[in-house]
Amino acid sequence: MKKAYLRPLDLAHAAVDLSHGGGGRAMQQLIGELFAKAFDNEWLRRGDDGAVLPASAAGERLVVATDAHVVSPLFFPGGDIGCLAVHGTVNDVAMMGARPLYLAASFILEEGFPLADLARIVASMAAAARSAGVPVVTGDTKVVEKGKGDGIFITTTGVGALPAGRELSGANARPGDAVIVSGTLGDHGMAIMARREGLAFESEIRSDTAALHGLVEAALAAAPGLRVLRDPTRGGLAATLNEIARQSGVGIVLDEKVLPVDPQVAAACEFLGLDPLHIANEGKFIAICGADDADALVAALRAHPLGLRAARVGEVCVDERCFVQMKTALGGRRMVDWLAGEQLPRIC
Image (tube, rainbow, N blue to C red; front, side, top):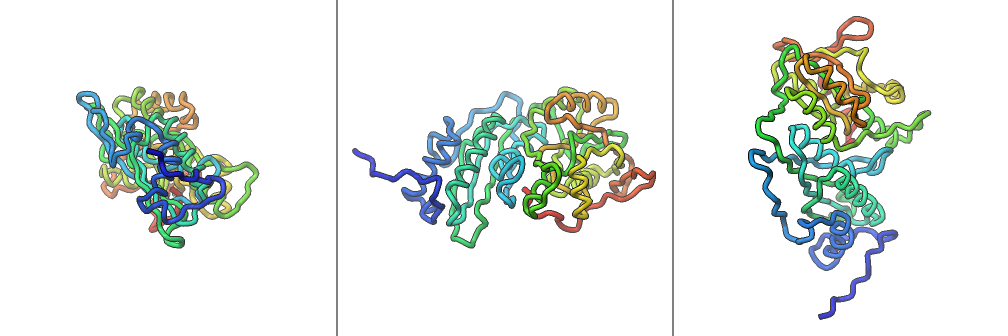
């Protein structure tokens, strides 16, 4: 029997309309010609409502993480909402010490969103998934009326395998431990802010968005006794360290002189009255390990392309108040507290 004729999607000029979310031919065409084609793999190809995945190796446990992405603008120096949606969830799985295996993706599209932009985002997302070796195996698409959304929102869920005996948690920090960051701070948030506000600097600030599971494996190999991994996204280093301090019931003291911040990011923060400690990152992590493992861990991170600027930036201390403090460059101390709200909304 001959298939009914459907005009191919005009990805260059057409836009999303409500029929693309209605469950009929238009929706099937959008899924088939765009999403399924970009993310093609054996599980997605089956066309079921879910994916039946192979069991992990004996003794491994499953880790699941999910994240919604509402970044504005959708395209920014160094990335876009598509690769960010992959990297963010891959990293959430990796921060648990797990090996990311599979992704699921959900798209909320606004009527009138250009198909050219959608195709660009999907292509970026597919490239990021391939590069990370973590396929998108199932998904969902919804369309809302014009004015009821903001172009596109993406939710991704990741599944990973955690080896037996590996236990990383924000509750594991102990007094005397070293605090290490894998690279420069504030790059992603300031790239978003500069593009959003039309700010031009002498050299372009680019987002650090990246999948970190390879760097995590290098860290675990160098420091098998690694206690805590966390990616400092919304709220930046300050919020993340306060979370860890509270979870572990300890204090943390940072050294301002060794915090890695690129000069253009520092200049942009000074110009805008912002603190890089509170600015989001999407390609960096915080590691907390025993002091004896710190040098080996920093060396292993610096040997990896994503960890070239890794640095030991502080230590865990006894403090029943669970304060995070900073030893300033002038020799004093100041509190590094939570923010009451969000300095930069819609950055991930």
